[in-house]
Every structure is written in C-alpha cells, then in structure tokens.
Length: 123
Image (cartoon, rainbow, N blue to C red; front, side):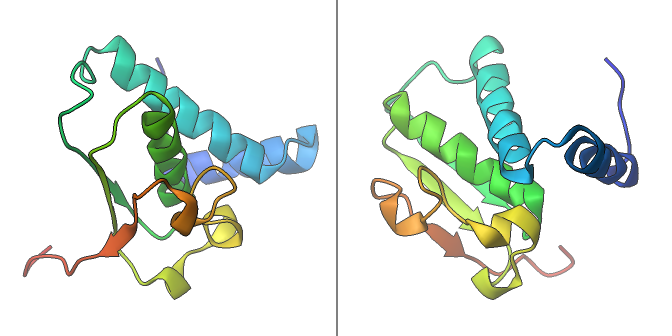
C-alpha cells in the first residue's frame, strides 16, 4: 500500500476527474464504499446493535463519511451517529453539492442526522 499526502490525493482526484472523466460523486461513492468494506474486513463491525460514530469534516472526505453512513444503514446498523465538524453551509466540493447519503440528503438517512458539535478546547 502506498500512502499519499492530502495534497497528492487532491491532485490524484483532480486528474481522475479531469483526465479520465470519472465524476467526483462517483469517486466519493467508491471511497465511502471502500471505507465501509475495510471496516467489515477488519472485523470492526460485528455487532449491528453497537453504536457507530462517524465524524465528518467539511470537505470531500466528509462526503465519504455520508456514504459510509448509508452503507451502515443498508447493512442493518441502526445506532449510527454522524457528527458534522463544521456548519452545513461550510461543506465544500461534492460534499456540498449533495450532502448526506442515499440521494445525499441528510433527512433521508433513516433517522441518522448529521449533528454539529463544538470541538473540545485545543482541538
């Protein structure tokens, strides 16, 4: 596995979108599904009754978290909490275009509502 910096990932995303022609929302869906599959493979999602907390930032990685939430719900996890670490108006990129999951609307998350919580002092 090769690790890349945030800047390198943005460049790779831009090349994939602009040179190959893959839509950003498709990349977000693939990343979110990949993250969900990774959590399953690691054995971290064994109890569908256990609470799951997702933290979402304002950029496209936050959008990936919305996709993970949808896959959790589809897999039968019902105690999913999503914390948006920014104001909804601060969402950027594809996360701003279609925030949430399913049809990318938070109100259709099957009861999972992104919640805004202040970060602890020094966070």
